[in-house]
Image (cartoon, rainbow, N blue to C red):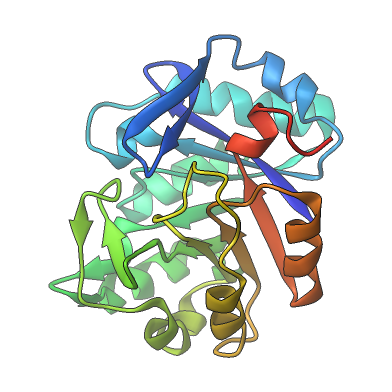
Length: 229
């Protein structure tokens, strides 16, 4: 299944290459809901919050509300969700799931105390852990800080705290250079939890290949550039 993404920066929907260079921006963010209305799921990522450069709270709130009420879409929200209270707040906005990234780690390892508190407040099935990987290792804080950890070694430890994983190949993110199926097959062999693949996806054939190994595909650049007609 293809899942379109709305990545927010300074009140606009943007697409970045490797999470750094802005390739395009869309001012009419709510118009994207019309564009994506036939998809059952939508990802909304607040890049400003993820990078610690402010937040787009009102915009995220209103997008969640409209996507759910007007179009019947289920929404996952990520970016800057680093406390239990924040996760619960985003769920109250209408998000079906929250995406936990940087807060999943502390002192170079899994932040188990945080997760134990989180699952007391938010059903674990409504929690998605982002395992963003650059050069084989986990990267956090808007892909600015690298850790010595690898996604495939973390999944079993994280399974009790979440309903699935969002795995982004940062090396290919925004490049439309093709999906790294070999890496995603390796991840699929580690966990039975749902996995959403992201990074470099450019064709319907690749989305079908991911579906064949039991993964959905979160797609940004190829959707915005109309490469998937």
